[in-house]
Each structure stands twice: as structure tokens, then as C-alpha cells.
Length: 207
Picture 1 (spheres, rainbow, N blue to C red):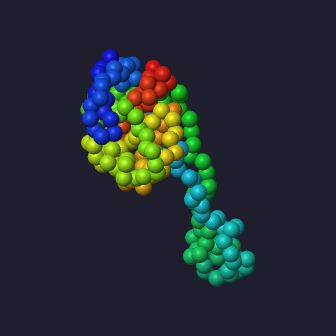
Picture 2: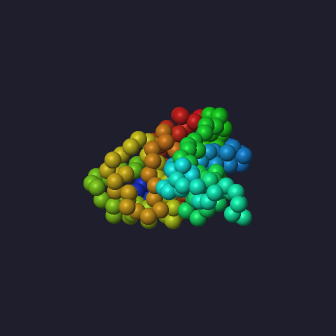
Picture 3: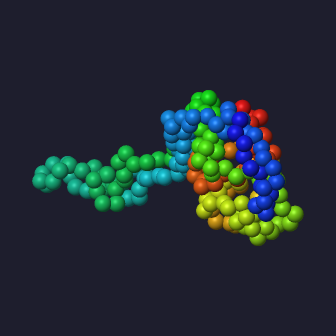
């Protein structure tokens, strides 16, 4: 089990904590991580793109010219795909891009992402992540004190409305709770900031 320094919200070291190698010390599996990230991004797609086919565009009720004798190719409607203002052939329609991956692969990907942050020194453990009032400056000062990065994922053990609201307007900061950590958010952050309780909850859930 690896030891990590625990700091308070002022950036001062207050203790150390041992984190399980089964959660924060495995060899990252790149294939699992890639699979999980592609799945996550696909599931974020709204799939609302839509084009009109020939039966949905207005006009085109009359045959442009008679079938034979004009020298032109035969045409049945001015709203066929080859015409200007015609319908779109084989265009996109609303659909769902959602699909599921194996739970074991998803779990391995999260463990790989957490371990990568721990090994690379981009994991910051804070004794407690909480604010007394709805105040953005408190969270900004905390991030500066603990030497956070440009993009940070801040994880608490449970949803703290005051802390979440206080951090909501800070660019590059995303807050979540231990039960909702996903591979993409961990990889996308420069620094992973965990409360002690969140680290223990992750060990309990994923260990």
C-alpha cells in the first residue's frame, strides 16, 4: 500500500494515508481505458440530427415534364434528391448512440485511470472538502493552496450542495462524488483531488 500526504484546505500537511494498491496501484490497462472512454463519449451524443427525405419537403406534386419525347431524362418530381431543394438521400435521422460495455471492463478502466493519477503524482488528498457558506472564493483559495492544475476533478464522498455550488463557476473545475467517478473525467483532469472519505469510499466500492 502506497502512502500519500494528506493536506488541509490551506495546503498544510496534516497526516498521511495508505491507499490500496488494488485501487490506486494497478498497472493501467490501455485497452480497457480506450473502450470506456469511447463508450462514455458515445453515450453523451444526443443523436438529434435530422434531414428531410423527399416525402417531407414541400412542393414537387406535379411531374416536371411528360415521360417521353422531350430529350430530357425522365423525372417524376422536382423534390427527388438530385434536384435543388429536393429531399436528402440516406441522410441522418434521430437515433440513440448508447451502448453498454462489460462491467468488469468499466471497473478496470476506472482503476487504471485512478492508478495513473496516483503513480504520476497528480493525486491530491485533502482531509475534508467542505465550505461553511456558498462562497466561490473559498474553493478558489483551496485550489491555489493545494497546487491544483488547470483542470481539476474534485471528488467528495457524497454530494455537498454548498461545495458543489461554490465550485460551479470556476473554470476547469468539475465536482462529483465517489459513487459517480468515471474514467473519462479522471483522465480529462490534470489533477485528481480527493477527500479522505472519498478515497476510502472508492476503496470500498472498487477494491
